[in-house]
Length: 314
Image (cartoon, rainbow, N blue to C red):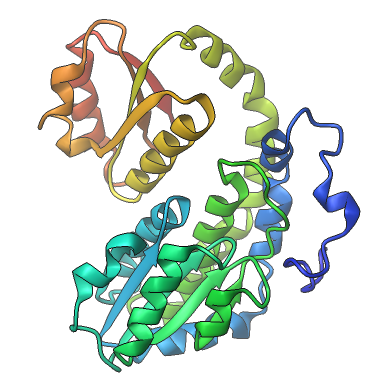
């Protein structure tokens, strides 16, 4: 188990080398199970204290940029559905414009940044502090600017991430937000202790699931990549919390392959994006067996009628 010195400041030489992988991104993809296990091993009082701060607020604002914004969107779904607390997710670069002078001491801003040095998120935090709002941050780096500005900080313990597409980052941020949501749900009474316990036990199984997925699906993913390598545009779709995964998938494709990709809530696919579908157009569907599954199937059938090529993550 990696100790709580894991954030930058005590990274070992071995941690910042490629470890036999051809590039850092692939190494970090294979580090995801370990990073997830570290994130889920937070001391209980860490999330409980953050939950108390959030619970004392009238409104929670989650803010981040890029990958962190997509993790924040997943957090909003969890906070709204499980914790029953008023939550908005605002991209950091627009945070000041969207909140103006509406923030006050009754609000809490949850700022998410892997490095803790994201300029747009720093500006959002400074704006929130000027308005009197409390700030809870979620970051991977000790003594970062955002952690110093915050009233309270949760560290993700993901270790160094040099790959441009932040693979570990998204996973551990969503994991920490999941823990936070469960503690908040229990505190607010929106979920019973038995239900929270069940969800927590399931959550603790995810490092093993991620490990199996990465190992078993490597060849499948590689084959699909070669099959669609000549495509110039992709569409990613999901419903509910899977919308955040779809958005993150599109971002990762743009960052790594320099290929155009868009992401939408699947229910919005008929409003514009379906017009660009032609025979052979690749559409990636994020479809876990949740309460949105049947609705997603209906959206899928509409797209299939246009002879799109469907790549499903199920």
